Length: 178
Image 1: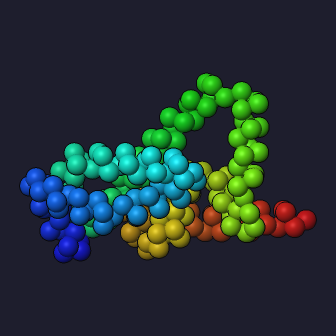
Image 2: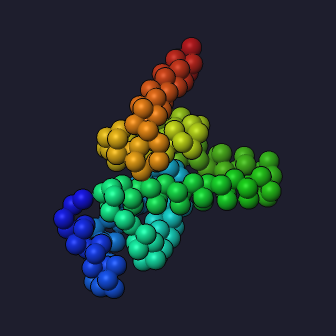
Image 3: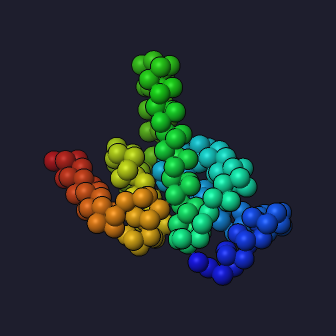
């Protein structure tokens, strides 16, 4: 573990508010990036990042130091994003009418531009597990082993998921060209 993170975590667990604030400041951008890449919505990602930071004070005591602090933090953010997506899906099924769905689709379509938009749209069709994997490996630049530790799967599973993502992106591009 990064010695600066180790010191800040130990001090924060001991009740040092300045150390906790420094830890949050040091990792806030990472928290937000992972949330945004998984959720695909800036406002939702900002809310989730704030929620994670708010609960971090309680949750940091559960950090055992068996992995890097950033690996533990990635897992915390991924789990929070999974929970949010599950809640939204349940709410969406219960409350969303066809008109609302069409309005959301049009608003999302208006935000898309060029290749970045195509990639974002295509990645959004992936399962949450594949989106989480691509967010950590491509978005955060984690090695397969690091992403595996954050996701609670084997490195081989991360490698398979990345292969599956590449296959689906190629197939989508080919389909659109035809």
